[in-house]
Image: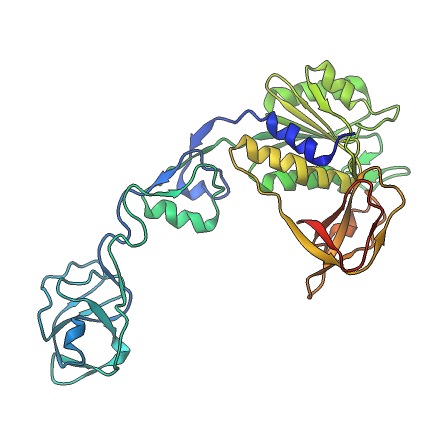
Length: 391
């Protein structure tokens, strides 16, 4: 058995980055930048009014001020503001030469025709200055950034309408087990529904992978072998669920090896998830995940997703935090690191939830994350800090 941290290092050390492609900015959300985005112009490109109001000289306040023109957004001023003058201006319009502030329209009153007066004693400049946000040549988004909605206006505002991004990893998902039926089927005697495949698909699609599902394969070596061959031809990564433990019908590791996959680990000092297996082939990676759904879910979160991000050039940041525990937690077996589902109180205290083991997927429905009990630790006292992987 190897610790979970060592397993993650092995996984990440074997990454071969994927190719890149350009996509429209319409389709860029969720993709990983493969190239820095550089601004092609100063932002703002001119001194811009931040308010509807009047552009004027601060030294001329409170007025009266003669209104010499009206400047809508998108229209270039035609006159310079001289002493005793102002220009009516709209939000986003270019501030005319000579003006050093914009007084808000609600802080003025009209006097004679084409004259206004400032009704307050002080004013902010209310000007967004040329180049104060970003200057031409600045890197505005770095390679490796996972593009979120907040990044899209940065792309479009700098003219980057076809960003270069990492190709989406192709992931094949294979469920194994004679006892499985698809979710739309009513299980017969000794059967259960296949929940892992949908769960894994949702997890990896959430981070931008392209998934092909190969269905349920019975615990028959020849059928597992044929399905793996097919999946390896079409995918960068193959995920098995089930068939990786020590039972008489757990053929997945042997089938991996037979197909040129060099297995780098097959046992984790982690509960749940001990029989997790990882191997590398000439052009394909294989993960053998445990059949129990909590185990499969957790190993996908902590190993598979960071690996897929790394393939795309994104430096995944593990969602660790520290919280105090609401009650003393004890366990008898300490050979493995334990990952315990917890909820979070309004006071920020974590509470172990009712959890019956790695088949109890419903226990994860409302949890905050998993607290980690290190190897050889038997007890955590009430009020102690625990490390939590946040979901």
